[in-house]
Image 1 (cartoon, helix red, strand yellow):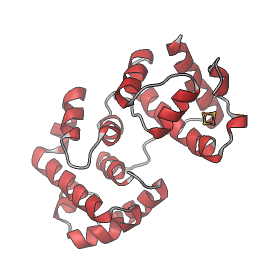
Image 2 (cartoon, protein in one colour):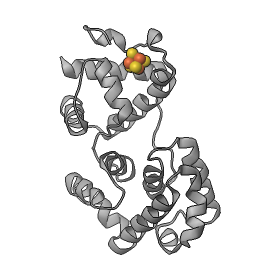
Image 3 (cartoon, rainbow, N blue to C red):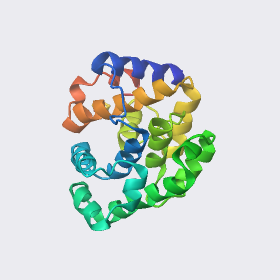
Image 4 (cartoon, rainbow, N blue to C red):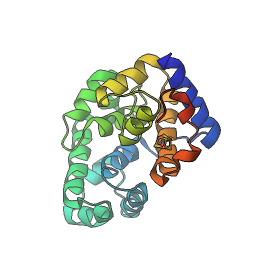
Length: 210
Ligand code: SF4
């Protein structure tokens, strides 16, 4: 039943919005950078920061690890918490320099998740975004948008509970995980965030109403 609801929601979102092909990045390391920068800010700010990093040749692991911290702070200022974010970017880049990104990304999924969570500034959502979109491994990403939409269709829980629900009730398919999270985010921005509940295509899935 719950599995059918999750699959139906996916189909409805896909029909409504079409495929999103996330994550918008040229390389796995750019995904990592974006996942850290997007915390508590809009994606447009992240794009601006990434363009600045690109212009300064700082999208490679070693270059970012060696980058001047003041320049880095300036480039990520538009994302807020710029000192913290600049320092965390350098930290994660240094980690990948020492460990080797290929070695890290070839870890089994749970070990990789745990490793990401051990890094400064990396919480559940950031870790799972890196595991799914950078390392290309099956880990469902939960965020505030997901929690809200799930509640509207009658499925509630904390981060880990919701993640377990998605991973148990959906086929273990990396492309579906990627697409589903992207669809939730885009739908939330277009509907939930604009109070377009009257037009909501998902409400029919909750017999008790939203
Ligand atoms: S549009 Fe409104 S009813 Fe629909 S999922 Fe978003 S918050 Fe819930």
